[in-house]
Image (cartoon, rainbow, N blue to C red; front, side, top):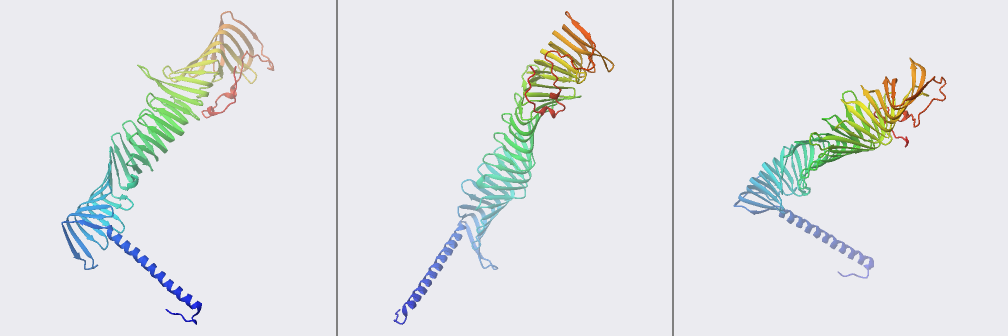
Length: 531
């Protein structure tokens, strides 16, 4: 190409720019053609017939494409996957295979799919197997009539019943999806897991074949020889027999039932933890342990509860509620008859309709049905308030039988807001009939102040001292007093104004501390020292 002077610099630049543009376009076209050619060659390599005894090519009249009718020891390669069968129809243009009789898809070193018939599409990389289908992945076998397998993403799907065998676990469902790379099954509709130790049923469930862990994602029941479990969310490790469940969680181990917002339980160790709104019920003995955190050990049976902890014993005519910052319940071995001990620590309270109490700590033994109260205990029974250094309440036939007060025993009952009957001594025993005190025995340094009544009117004031005192009570009122061992006493007329009513040393009226109902046992009180 020659340029004249008249062409000028602008003409020369325009010429070279147009030439460079044409070259660039040409190079770009060649680049995309090479990519398309490479992709075409790659797609062609996606399905490759490796071997067949007989390969007959037939022209399809409708599509004008070749169809290979292949018979005998058929073997295909699809990228890194192998497909074998007895016979097949192969369409290279569509990259489709229809495999007949003993179809077998091999992916990697561990996954095999068998079926009477299999269709494979090389473009979508989807395989569909039908008839006596078996999927094998390591220790897992899936049996079904029809399966769809995404070869590229390694996802298997069935929707007309399947059975999975994984070591000791057999799982069945209507619908199932298997994520091969995660070793994870997702089951839906009529899910059932059978194990030598239990049968598990659910509507929706996931299962990890590597860890043999079941994940609950819907209402689920577990039935075993020694365990029943229900929840709507959670998981269960079938090897270690460890579970964590929540959402209406419930466990029954044939000795106790356990409810809570969430529960962790190791069935192999017989150990459980429960959180929030926890209730353990001993169905045999009508006993409950409740709290917001509870631990449970099956053998030997132990329970630990805290955070609003309550022990409840239900009887025919009344129920006994025991609360403390911490509760422990243990079963004490015994060659004849093992028995339960319930221990309450710190800020303990008792409520029943017939009796209420508070103390720092207490122990209840079900061997002899005795409640022992320690450190500044107070018991209220009907109109009477009883205090001492420590106490023991004896229960017989599910009713209070007697109450023993040790050291610094003191009994107070209110006549009115100014006057109180008072009894004190070293030790004291109160006897109950129909859950009401009817007799009090005082031993050692006995003192008493009680008001004589004439109907509803005050008739006199009796003050006495004696080595021992026996007092008879009816409807909360003193009816008779018997004193021996050098008694001393006087009867004075009552003070009509009541300004100087007598008090024995150590007198306290603690009615404001008395639990009024089963919920009042949780009331927080300032530290009040009684001595």
